[in-house]
Image 1: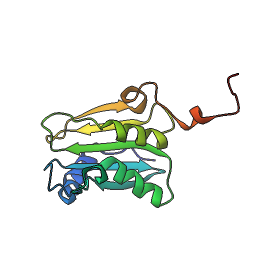
Image 2: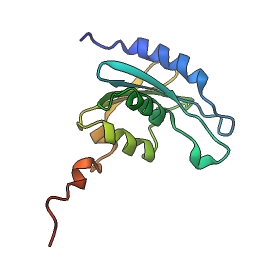
Image 3: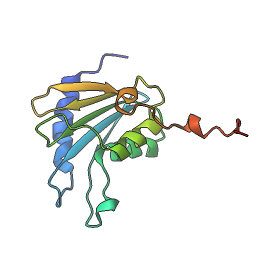
Image 4: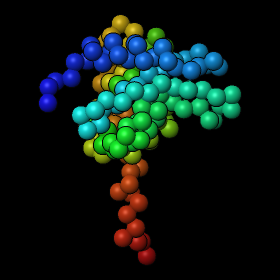
Length: 140
């Protein structure tokens, strides 16, 4: 597989972010997730009932899962923030479900195309995973 061109990813994120539906916060988020050599896009979609709002990261991952891809290796983000805005806690846990290795990458871009790279293991230390649900060994 060829190397991923991060500039191409950044350009696509700037295109996709225009689709965000943010009438309340005015804070747009675009996300691209890479799963099984395919790319899926998502944006945040707000709702007047705020807890129903869907974050861009969860939207992209849900699209990948809907298309039969559950092995997310990379996530790319762009927000309206002047800084490198990291995913919320709920999105970190959601990403963790589909990023099985602690080394899976999260790239957070700013508007100039610069980025910071984290791993899921760094951004969600001590993460709770499906391995933690192994009930074969019960404490007595």
